[in-house]
Structures are given as structure tokens and as C-alpha cells.
Image (cartoon, rainbow, N blue to C red):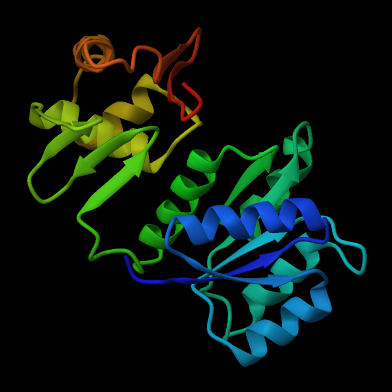
Length: 230
């Protein structure tokens, strides 16, 4: 993996050190900043592939700085992931609409954090050469179209592969059956919603046989979610 430069903006010493450790272990090159002023100086002097930003900082609001950053032609294309405290999700929605690419909640799951970083880089086109997507203890080989769990490689059908690709690049978020149908088959193809249930059931059977029983969860009355916590 290329050593992508990631700016970590966090004023809590323990959390910042943990983030730096997780990112370094995953092969990234993190740089630390504790204030918006330090962060601004960093982006003005060095090129970053992604910013992991505490949305509330002592010297300024992280959302305001992200908004300013996105309006700057020199920095507007840098993906921004907010780090927020659990329970503050509702306060971050407006920020996600305009300023940020994603968010992670504290306390962090290392797997979830790295998965979201990789997805943000992928969406920005910075990760296009990587042929493998890793999340939740599962590896998806996009070149050979196969699924890896532990030290075993599994052959799966094209629909299950596309489902897993979507789930692994959009972890820990719930999607309706209609949304999943649109992602897998496209909006121009009419397929009954219950079709997705059949493919989800087959995918689950494959995952359950290899110790990943609850990684694809049913969200009752809504749809399905791929969870990195399982």
C-alpha cells in the first residue's frame, strides 16, 4: 500500500496517540495537529491525502474549518472524516451534507476506522490501484473476484460478490432493499424487492459457514446493514 499522508486533528492526547498508532499499523503516514491553527499550517505546507478531524476543538469548530477548507481550491478535494463522540451523530448531519465525506464515533473500532479511511480514499480515486478491500476480517479480491475469510479464499457468484463489494465499501450504515437493488442491478432494471432477501440469505449462509454469522444484519422494518463490529 502507498503510504498515504493523513492529517490527524485531535486535541485529546490519548485519542490522538491511539489514532496515530492505528493508522501507522495499517500502513498510513499520519501527521498530528492539536488545533485548527496547526492543522491549517500543516495543509499549507504539506500535501495530505485525507484529514481525520475532531469536529469540536478548543480554538475553533471543526465543521467551520472543514467548510473553509472545502471552499479553498487548493484543498477542496482532500477527503475529510469527522471524529465525534457517540451520541453526537445528529449534530454532524449538516456537516456531512456539505463539509465532510464521512464520520467515525468515539470510542473507535480500529477495523471500522481503517475501513472508512480506505473507502474515502477509494472514492477520491487515490486507492484505485489496490486490488483488495479489507473490512471486518474479510478480504475482497476485486481482480480475481473472490472472497477471503481468514486464510481461505471462497468463490462466490457475481451477485453475492457485488453485494459484498457494496457492503464493504459502505460499512455500518443501513440500506433499504430498494437502495440495494439500485446499487446491484441499477435503477433501470425492475426486480422485486424480495429478490434481495434471497441473495442476502445465500450470502449469509456462505459467511456463517466461515464464522461470520452476524456481519450482515437485518434492520427490522428498514433493510440491511454490514457491521464491522460483528
